Length: 134
Image (cartoon, rainbow, N blue to C red; front, side, top):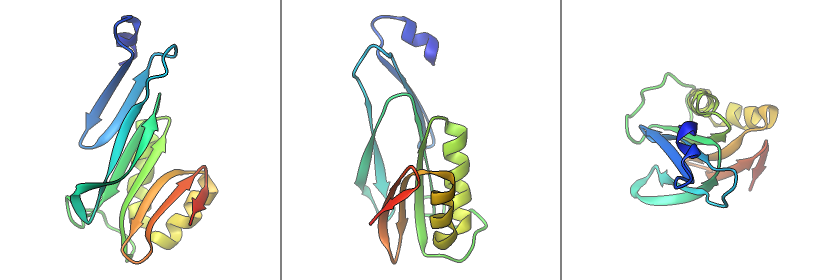
């Protein structure tokens, strides 16, 4: 993707694979990608959005594919991770769905993760660099 940014007419590029997205921008621009996070309880609604530059975002959940991940029993519905790489974001989003909410909260702090989780009982919890906002 980055070679496309050599063209002065292109300020940003993105690649979307199944809702997991990696974006890149020309360092000389103030352009940012606006990436919406789908509400797992209503796929016609956006529960929030992230402004991304040279980053990746991945979401794992049960609303589209059901219980497709072997996981700890939990009311966790969806996890979205923002990172510098898509491999990191996707790996953590999937691992956190498998871990369940209680372990997920510990992992967020330990590994300084950024994103949002949706739990059927706790609602939305946003977290940034390991700190969960209530």
